[in-house]
Every structure is written in C-alpha cells, then in structure tokens.
Length: 359
Image (cartoon, rainbow, N blue to C red; front, side, top):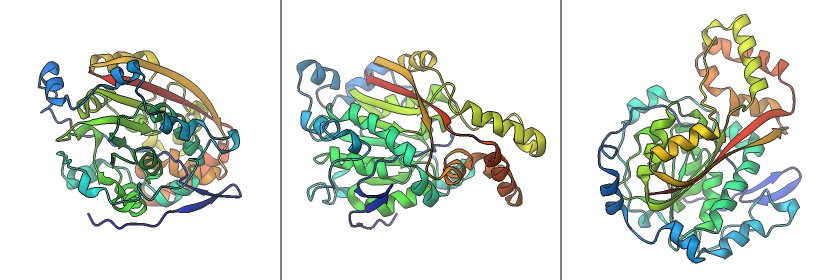
C-alpha cells in the first residue's frame, strides 16, 4: 500500500471550523475464522502475551494517565463532541517505522468477495451522529492508557476516530483495520504514515504481537458471527488488555427496519427476510465475552434518538449499503428512495456498549 503524509485536516461542521472531528464507521464483513490461536490453550496464550503490567492492575493502583482523560472530559459542554485541540507536532511524527506488527489472514481476492461496497466520501460527510457516539468510547479509554500503548481500531472507516486516538496515544502506536477497501483508502489518505491502516476482516485477524487496547465504534453489528468475533478480539489483546466497544444493540433502528421490510415485501423480494446486522443484547453479549476469556465485563444499552443533518445521505451511506449491494444497479436508487419516503425522525438508535479486560 502506498500511503502519503497529509496535512492536518480542518473541517467545517454546523457553522464552526473544527479540527480532529470524531467520527465512527460502519462495516466489517463476515469471513472464515483462522483457527491457529483459538486452538492454543488460553493459559499458554496469556503467558506468551505478557508484555507489561495489566490494565486491571494499573486501574487498581491508580496509575492511569489522567492527562489523557482530562483532554476529553475537561471540555465545555458545547465542545464535547470534538477533541479540544489539533494534533500536536509530536503526534504528527512518522509512526509506521515504530509498528512492528504483521497480520495473517485471507487474501484480498477472497475478502473482496464478501465485502460490501461503501460510499466512503458520503459516509465521511454525513456521519455526524457517529462522531458524537464515539466520544463516549474515547472517554472510557483516555484515562486508562498505559505508557507507549499499542491500540487497535477495529472498523476504522474513514479514519476519524483513528485520528482522535492518535492524539490520545501520542507516545504509542495505532493500528486500524476495516473490511471495506473504500473506507481503508480514505483512512489511509487522511492518516498517511501516522498510523498503520490495512484492509482486514476481523474474523481473520491474527497479529504477530498483541495490543494493549482494542477500540471499535459503530461497526461490530455488521459482523455476523459474534461468538467468533469476541474470540478474535481476545486473541488480539495482551493479558490485562482493555476492550472498549460501542455498536448497534438490541432494538437498534427498529422503525427503520420495519420500513425496509415493508418496502422489500412490496417491491424488492430479493431482500425479503434478509438483514446484514446482528443487534445483540447485553446479557447474551456478556456471556459471549466471558466464554472468550474476558473478565470485568460490563454490557449496557443506551438509547440515542438521532436527527442527522443530511437524512438522505446518512440513510444511504450508514444504513442501506449492504441492502443496495444485493440489488441490481438499476434497482438500488428506487429502493433507497422508497425507504427514505417512509422513514421518520428521530431515527431510533440504540447503542450496545461493552467494557472488558482480557485475561
């Protein structure tokens, strides 16, 4: 992959000029699980992955890095949707040569067969709501990062949350993966060599070296196999590593799904009874995480009624990409138009939040 160093991106949103907008993304596709790590006894994996003090012991001893937390929590209410300042000169230094990771997984040819095409530019422009949701995840991470932390952003999308992580992990390393080539291309353009970004199905993810923190926002409900999902993320984390997740949860966009089902039943039979999402509940998610070896698991739902500034762009780029990909090209726009004609606001978003420690 050819990456280019980009200047700091300054953006205008809702009448203000903002640097470092937080944004979420929305896609990881289904793949074939790599069994190599899962077949290893958990105790052996933990011994191999002991690279430093656990996050749990850091929290217990009070050695969390409060300045990072203050960067996010100290904002005035009107500014809490955004990071407080632009990336520092230190954070802008080249990082690619400090990321000694490699990943093994499916070839791009196989990945292309299962990945949904995304309109990354429209998503990047219309995803203001996801930007606000991502802030809470960064708040949960900020005060707990070990020195020199290695952080993995799963489902990085267009790279805006990854860009925010670079500010929080100014003395560490940031990796970012996404199954969408369109998203990866835009993220690589934005981040240059400040982070390592590559196309990767999370269900095939195997790192040669574990990370300290795994973060994901507005993405994992696109993964069809949640049992395998949490196993892969557990394998990517060192013992005591931090997991902080936010994605669509039980009850998410119920009213929109009813509209989609009605439109499909009337005019688009190829979509009848089909859904690309897993909107899991907190109890089943907690059981899956514990089975995968996580401890200190907390899972909870949060209602987030949403009124996007650009409803049409948001629905097309954040909700309907997988549905439209299943349709013949000439049928995609009529389907999207039929859905948009019936969708009402606010959109009934429900977020599943997950916090856990790897063992």
